[in-house]
Length: 180
Image 1 (cartoon, rainbow, N blue to C red):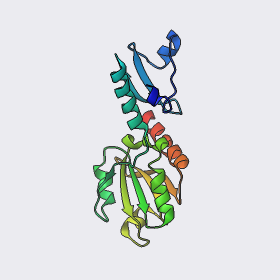
Image 2 (cartoon, rainbow, N blue to C red; image 1 turned 90 degrees about the horizontal axis):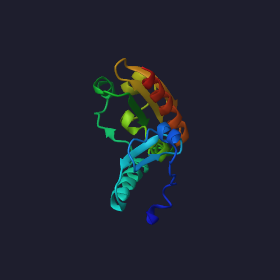
Image 3 (cartoon, rainbow, N blue to C red; image 1 turned 180 degrees about the vertical axis):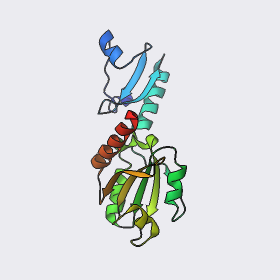
Image 4 (cartoon, rainbow, N blue to C red; image 1 turned 90 degrees about the vertical axis):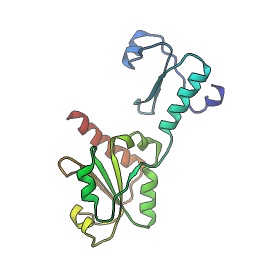
């Protein structure tokens, strides 16, 4: 645990009210929360190695990483929308720095927790392409969050976006999805 002490803040819960709030079920149990208080990992442990394994799992889930990009042939983003079971994130990018920065922001650890809630598709932006016209994309980078069942755009972000903007956008969509 000493080698991990810089990665985590440790809090020991001993009162019933706090344990009920975080839904602690077994003892001992390690519950890992992100900076916003959202749970990212939960594991029971019995000894040092099993606690180390739990900490490794939490670190892996919270580490910066690229989203799993769905492969789609050129001009076929509309088909991806029909086949997606989760909301689809269409990322229209080109070779410019703003697009690279936006793609890098999608890898930020504050955005990673939303990766499993969406299907991500990268689309090469061309100004007069059928895809750009169909989705009303004026420039790259542009990110569209599309409801796959209704084929409607839930959120649209145009221009260079940072991790903070993307996190807010994904949080809004996730909150709407949970209400349904």
